[in-house]
Length: 140
Image (cartoon, rainbow, N blue to C red):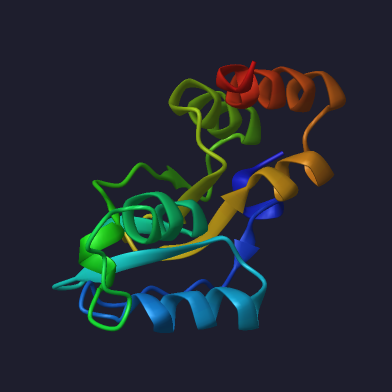
């Protein structure tokens, strides 16, 4: 199975200057846990709901009224290609201990996101089990 057969399609990204409060509202409205951040027509990072809490709200002096995506985002981006085997992408997510992976096409354009939910619906049971154990290992 290919990544394109399992991923969420049609994902958008926002500017690093987007207000954190706007990101939170977008996450709530779209029932998602992360938003890719792009600048100058390329992905530069990701903001997760956990980033907003741990790098934002939990920090002394954090002002949610003025904070932007750049203030809380995880810089750098890991991604996979839509034509990659799902097994390969899941192994990549497992190694990185991440729950979401942007998907790009051959033109280097983001075309979707592969999430742990997508994996659980599409990947073989053994692969899902290994992945979930690996990503959750630090919670013991």
